[in-house]
Every structure is written in structure tokens, then in C-alpha cells.
Amino acid sequence: MKSIKFLYLLAFGLFIFASCNDDPVIENQEEVITDLVVTLTPTDGGDSKTLIFNDDDGDGGNAPSIVGTSLAPNTTYDAVIVVSGFEEGEDEKEDITIEILAEADEHQFFFQATGLSIDFEYADTDSANRPIGQQFRLITREAGSGTVLVTLLHEPTKDAAGVADGDITNAAGETDVAVTFPVTVE
Image (cartoon, rainbow, N blue to C red; front, top):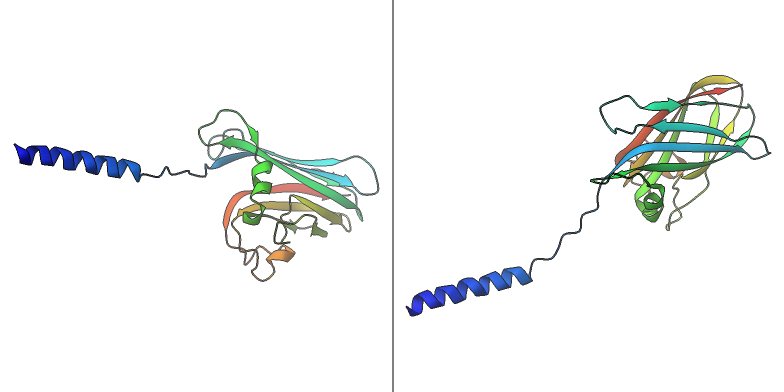
């Protein structure tokens, strides 16, 4: 009888010990990016232009809607990106830009023009003075048509060669979103 009581006490003690040592695991929930809007405002005045990506059903399902724009040649635009979507398990869209900026050391936007003479300059930095790209300048040159690829990387290697200058080649990391916008400079 004493051995049964001892076993019960031992089992109860192990249960209490195990319960006290279970630290809750707080997971960083994944978000589903459904919208990316780039607003381009000419620095010398004039109407803003907008690049819009929308994919309300996320990956798979229906094709996303992508709206490009027409820009003026030899013009500098101040640009701001707003990203929104759903947190995993949530039903209401939220501004994910806030999270990107809160975790700026772990995010960077990259820009690539194809078929166009366009330059990009970062206008914001993280706590280590490395680029983020949520704010940037887009400078057009001569007329033409092509595309602008906007890519957001999570945990890029920001100190790798060329990354601070916007070269995605050595950045590594994980792609949060990549959108190719049609753009005409005329």
C-alpha cells in the first residue's frame, strides 16, 4: 500500500514539476499580404501616381489585380509604400506596414526596372542606418515602357555586398511579396 501511495505522490510531483516548467511559446504569426500600394508624388508638384496590387484571396485562387501607371520623363518622385493584409487566422485586413517598420532591421524593399531608364534611391533607414525602402525616390529618365518589380524581403542579409545600394543578388532572406507593375514613361 505504501508503494502505491508513493507512486501516486511521485506521479503528482512530476506533473506539478512539468506544469511549472512549461513556458508558453509565443509565435510570430504569419501574415498574408493582399495589398501593396505605391504612391508616387512628383517633387516639383503635380498629381500623384499610384501602383496598386490587390489579391484578396491570397496565394492561389483568383489572379491578383495589378494596376500600373504612366510617369513623366526626367522627373523625380517621392514614393511611399503601404502594405496590408490578414494576420493568420484573422478576418479583418490590417496595415502590415506598421509591423514592417517595427521590424525594420528584418525587412528591406528592393526595386528593379526592366525596359526603362529609372533610378531608385532609399529615403529611410533602420536602427543600424541600413535601408528599408518603405520610402524611396524614383527618378525617371527618357521615355519608354517596361516594368518595375517591387520586392519585400524578410530577414535579408543587409550587410552583404551591394544590398545597401538596392542590389537583391546577395540579399538572401525570404520573399514576403514581389509584384511586377507595368509602367510607361511618356
